[in-house]
Image (cartoon, rainbow, N blue to C red; front, side):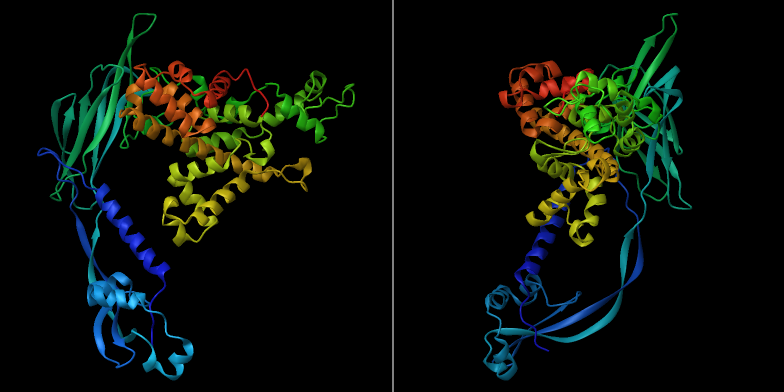
Length: 548
């Protein structure tokens, strides 16, 4: 059988894959000090079957064999394989030649120009491949402390527990060691009890790793620990302890603390950044003129007793309309609470903040706003859809396969074609648009319910992008130069006005030598972005709920 050259698209795809692999290798290069652990070095082998394909490259005219190569995939060899096996000259000549016309190929193949490939043979083979074994771990926890408002309260001097874990049967952790506040420590066995002293507000860093009887070590781990001594009104003392680390196995860190490397306020997060244990604790009873207006217009509320029928010319409820719609309005603004709590826990964002965001963005009415450019409970835009996929990889991996082929999704959002990225963004916006002319109330409530999770993940993406924007404009970890509370305010700026507005304000504040606080940053928002300061303050205060 005669085979001509492969399409450019497939060849280009191979080079993109090579580029992606090289970039991952580059990212993985880290230097290690002489005292650092060697890291995991454990593999086993397993047989792997594969098919070997032998190809001959021949000339059309003389049927001369000019090159032979062996590949391990179906279909023609790729350009880079031809380049390696046959040399640059033959590879370029084959790639540049025109395909032979079908009529010539059928009747006079010797008149075809250039070269073709002939599949000479294929053979099923077996080889041994190396498989990495699970690496040893060290987990971090506290002993003798209780959780209070998302922080740890210890009635006695706190002890940090470093627990080594060896996943390979028959092997064990022989030691856990590291440094804390510049002092070295070494613990025989798989458990290390490390007394920790009072620190300043920025905390101290614990560096630790484990030695395994397998003959290797774990990775080098870090934890940031803050210990603050507190005095009660009765003169007793206790300690607030916060630990930020991927290895932490206590109660979950406050939302985005790990991403920002930022400790929450001593004693726990404020109410507006909290996540209650029960959905009932999210209940609110505020008046929303836009929500009430929609409930009256859709017939949920009968406001015929009002002289103005309860709705003003702008579509907002009048005072009479608000009074008539009170019960329905209170019921509606709380109908999403369980979904908000679940989505907030899954996306690791504050549930109270997410509900306040919905109140400010849409007053809980999940329609389309501003001529259809802002959609749903959290008013998602085309740009917002882009940054949620860019900055929330977990959500992208969940959403993409429902829209595109899994093989395409595996490339990653930024490696998709612009056409696929646009289709993905449009699909996300469609998924949060609950407007439905044929549905009761003109709203698809199932779609509205689904959108709660999308917006929780969008808020999480904004948190991640905020970390990048602050670092990129200051060369400092966000938690080192801004408070936890203010970083959430910055996240709301990013959500509402975009990374450009946030970045310019951070840079301007930094260049003026000002401390990176919310008040300073708000004063340095550009004229175009200035209104977002009111947006952030509205959500923080939640006493002002303007219509979209």
